Length: 79
Ligand SMILES: [Zn+2]
Image (cartoon, rainbow, N blue to C red; front, side, top):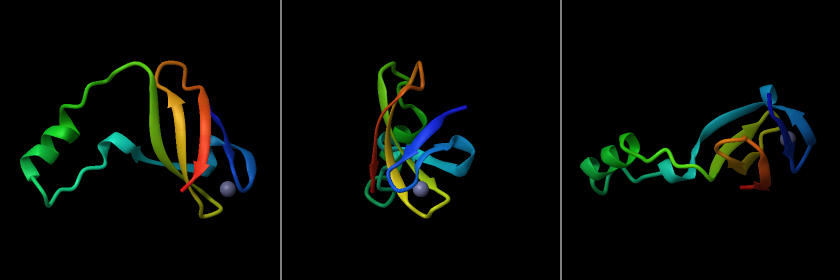
């Protein structure tokens, strides 16, 4: 279970948030469909930090920086 610090509401339980996607999975499907499919399904699963998009029950969208191994959250910014 994660404790996520919402910039608007303070620390809240992970159950109040919805995970949307990692920022590296954001691709434009209309530019090159084959390249987009490759980017979505053959991404490397590397160690390190990941930048993710989450939304909170308060209606705010967040950019969360999280370690892929430990799940430690190092930064949360409003989008
Ligand atoms: Zn909030």
